[in-house]
Image 1 (cartoon, rainbow, N blue to C red):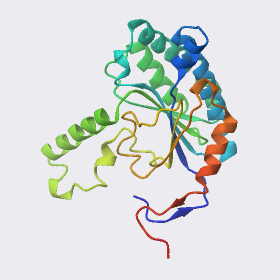
Image 2: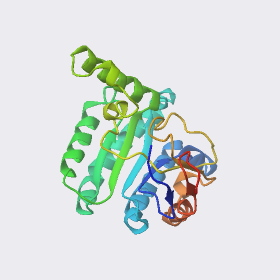
Image 3: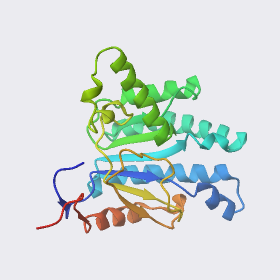
Image 4: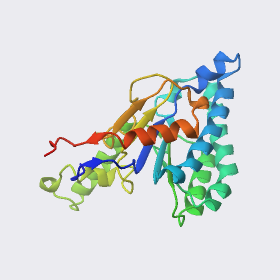
Length: 241
């Protein structure tokens, strides 16, 4: 938890639940994958606008651990879209000084996709601009369970004393261990739930639930939400003097 009151500053880290691609496509009489392709274009636009609005870290929810329940056609299409997006965008993001990381459980992902993910992370590792984190096969509960397993192994190996485990300990085992917690979480499409996204990390985040479907979400709307954040009085349980 931050130890200072945050007022009048913009968010350093914004996380986005990019919802509404399928509905956007259906409203236009097109297959759901058409909406996902349109949504990918919005990712590019928002990433490129982060520098202008002062956002240093951007985390996007691309595919959840629950999304495997969708049709095989949609899941296969999404995996193909991820492979193509990474292959196409890697050089452009590096040229724009964007550092890319992926979070989530990679075990269920195919070898070609994970290879591209590893390559993109390596290619952008020395970039010092915006930090883009993409959550693929990610779930907050799954992440905490995996982190707890790693922590338990360290306890078993004698590397960690159970008595020393505090609220500051577990985050060191999370997928996001090198990232600051999100200041602002945005969800598009009018749904007002967090859908198992960054459960531990977003404990003190501000939330914005907007009606816009993700393929219609513009850099201008993103900038407006970032600006609105600066107007919030962030006390983290304290009382202003």
